[in-house]
Figure (cartoon, rainbow, N blue to C red):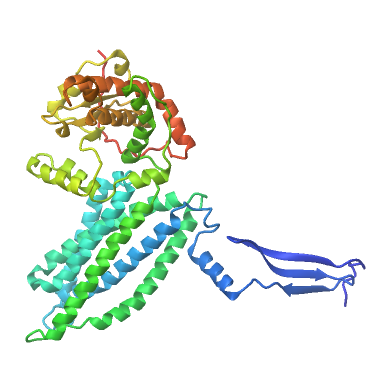
Length: 502
């Protein structure tokens, strides 16, 4: 029977759409004729390949991609998937070696002894991860790229140690495998912390959960691919002989395993480096803030060095430029070791040579922010006379005296009332001071002794004047350019000193 509520009239149409990353796509058409009969017609969605592509995108990419994520999202995720696949395949090889080292398949092995060894290894890994998180957890937000690379490199070390257990005496197994487990535990802490920071960075549309879920889907697909490749790779792996001489065939298979492992390790390191280099983080850590400050203040410094001649144009570098000028590889590693070497002055020339060989442009001088003052520096840093204007600031910046310019360091002493904005301002001022002294700005212009007291004093006054005059404008320009100035990740220390002007 026909519905009575419809009266005769023209045909009416209604189209059904689904809204996705490709816009509004028609799915069905509803037609109501003059007699009230409803006809439904399915609208072709195009070729089957297009439907498959949309299904894959909906499974592995965040909703509204690419508008809902950062521009570098796809490049980073591709390299991250490559390194994840390499890690999974190497994990198969190293797990087999660990089982052999524990005595699996050997009639002489004791199940109880193997269980005790496994518990000891896991316990050491847990203790190591707790200690590592306590010591370095607060710094991981500031140096996400460096800690991401650290996580993968330390994981490479752990997997290599696991694979090497088959080449070492049985008595060494517990010690070497425990060290390998510790390396993997440190990787877990650093990788987990940096993954959270990178996911938050990628999600620009309030879609952190969606981005995280799609990354999980990508990891699942990588794992499934690794299962298939792992089965193929197992064909080149032979079990060790039960007794007697090791046959030539087994030696050859073992060499093939090591060759595959080393090739995967090299690819893993390369993929991680490319992925980290692709990141264009918007937070302001020490290195990024230094790059931005030197570029923005550079025109003023250049103009003043030519007695006021030239054009003063303040520009804020875009994230791509800053990311390309960040050092996250060997240069940053050698510099960190250089700063940690302390009394091992004999190693410093070799570290400087290493930095030069890798083309590092990072300054040797270290900027210490909110760290505990050694007793020998208290008088020079905290009790030196300063100007009345400087005494009112909640921080004090001093350059320690060393026999050589590269042996000095900049120290920022913070007052208990110092805020994040004060730390931001102090670090910009210290970066400018470091640049002025390290580049010989005044020593070349006024024929002063490089790194001498007169040059350092003039540089301190000039840097303080620049910050006093321009810091509000600099901060506003950063904010307008999209940089996250509200929460700079400069990782100041916890030590504060009451700076009395009397």
